Amino acid sequence: MLSAKATCNSHGQDSSYFLGWEEYEKNPYHHLHNPNGIIQMGLAENQLSFDLLESWLKNNPDSAAINHHSIFKQLALFQDYHGLPAFKNALVEFMSEIRENKVTFDPNNLVLTAGATSANETLMFCLADPGEAFLLPTPYYPGFDRDLKWRTGAEIVPIHCSSSNGFRITKSALQEAYQQAQNQNLKVKGVLVTNPSNPLGTSLSLHELELLIDFISSKNIHLISDEIYSGTVYCSPGFVSIMEVLKNKGLMNTEVWKRVHIVYSLSKDLGLPGFRIGAIYSNDDIVVSAATKMSSFGLISSQTQYLLSEMLSDKKFTKNYLRENRKRLKQRHEMMEKALQKAGIRCLKSNAGLFSWVDMRHLLSSPTFEGEMELWKKIVYDVGLNISPGSSCHCSEPGWFRVCFANMSKETLVLAMQRLSSFVDSMTKESNQSRRRQPLIGNPRRLKSLPKWVFFTIVHYRKVGEERYVVRCDDQLVSNNKRVDFL
Ligand SMILES: Cc1ncc(COP(=O)(O)O)c(C=O)c1O
Image 1 (cartoon, rainbow, N blue to C red):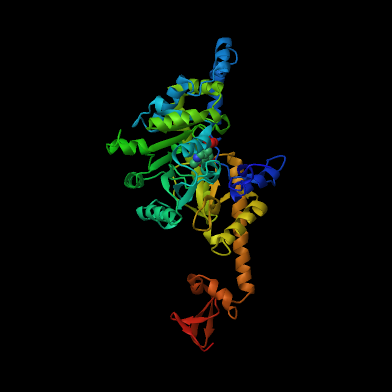
Image 2 (cartoon, rainbow, N blue to C red):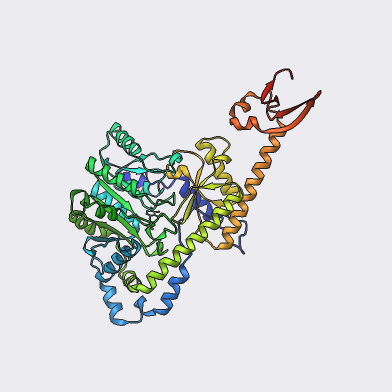
């Protein structure tokens, strides 16, 4: 009785990314009412600078346009899908400010959308027909399966990046993904990157950006750069926008210039995901025109546009906000990283975003995605932390997790880290005990699964006659590093 779209399974809601949110909703942590509840660390929300927005609003009460009759009426009746010119001007200037004014944006090339979610989907509708593909570096934001594929019928082909080079995009990975798409008979229409990356928390290097431009030039395809986290870069290396690279390479107003599109939103940089303010910036007039028409399916309320045009035109405020927000993100990131380090957990070196990409490979019972799921369930249900497993971000290596740090108070983060640290301690104790209880000798299956270094761990010394031998944990005696066979 229903459409195929309504009943199909490609929305991606059954991913562990969303399942973790559901578990959190059932048992949310509250310091007074539910102190044993689940702490939400799977939500990339920025609450660190909310006080700055509140204090601006307090000082600018008219910006809500409720008390001023004529403005209120004007806004209530406004329904042009081109958006309020004042807001578009303020938004492009804010985007330039984040890029240290190294590039400028023309408001005529900007299309307003209901968040970056809608911007990404709209671009897909403009650039790909059903069954055509975009290449995405892994790990990627789990929402893309829904945003890019579900209603458009477009496909995603992963560009597999690996921990061996810090998950950087390489020429060979791009070429392999392209080949993979061809093997699947999929026409490649473009590459989509997030810069800075969600979930890695790293910005793309100049080398990667140039590689991407060369690749899309040679294949005659599009590039979408989702720059939703551009204002969250809190330490070096800084953020380089794809537009800056095109400009510096003298590619403005060329064919490739028209095939590069930026997605932006105020959900992360200003911490306003509920306001649904997103945008597409494209150098192609046809894309701008088509996307503008499509934007009528997801417009931003004119009252919100008015409020934000007032806020973003206040240059003193935006300058201070961006600086203070970066400072707070940096402090928060350092705080979490240090606590993780204390618990023996390392993170990918990052410089941006609202999360860290955390390496828990050493805590897996087996180096598989089943092992990752097993650990994830323990962390959600036993430890009480909702974090996002790498598999939900299509990471090709098991054992990585995205852990968010900007959507909670400092006290909650301290508690979350204490919970994780006790969990790691208990795991270590448990594995030490079971190692002692279960002698490895006579258990070949267990011996085989242990990494090589384990065999060189000294358990204790034993004296045989005048000789002193080392007893390794596989119960072998070693003298001068040679195995002693007679015992
Ligand atoms: C890379 C990326 N793009 C898009 C979105 C969606 O953002 P919005 O709230 O503006 O729709 C997110 C949200 O987490 C994201 O991380």
